[in-house]
Picture 1 (cartoon, rainbow, N blue to C red):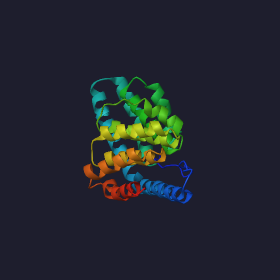
Picture 2 (cartoon, one colour; picture 1 turned 30 degrees about the vertical axis):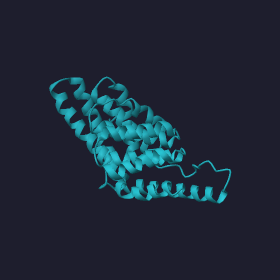
Picture 3 (tube, one colour; picture 1 turned 90 degrees about the vertical axis):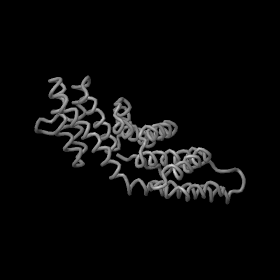
Picture 4 (cartoon, rainbow, N blue to C red; picture 1 turned 60 degrees about the vertical axis):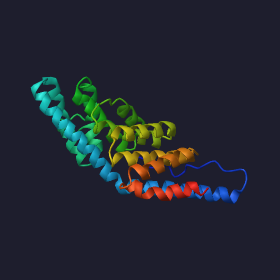
Length: 241
């Protein structure tokens, strides 16, 4: 799954006058998009690790509670356990579709146990697996259904959904979802990352004012983050136009 890698073939509208200046402006944006891609490649393992850890912690708590509460919830939690192992090992296709040893796969388990908490968790896993396999449309359908109220998992799933929208070129939905995920996360790791991705998309939508506002906010509110330390470069480029 890619959280957000802006498409290389995305271009900005060209100005009718001053072609040299327009070319320079577009070159600056392309450089910014390339830097965003490089930033994502550098940090995606950390982001995925956080999402995975959060989900596994929640799953563990669900497993404990289900032993006390509901037999069906227990069966569902036990059924998805092998898939979590496959997911953590990076075998996303097997985690999604199942194996020959009795594990049915997140896709089937999400349907079979759809009314349980574990079944909803399986659907979230299925969405993450699909995104990892570049099946963004299917992934978005799974992730969009996730309505967990957990303050750690919910913004992470929302950020993954925003990434799917971005990779499908549904940029208005992507930027809105990234901003919503950033507000919901409320921490110094995911929030600046999601706001940064939203700013990059605003630039690609030819909305430099909104992008500049986010870059400045990241610099002030999250100065110790990677994005906060990079913000000056993007602010300088936009204010020099």
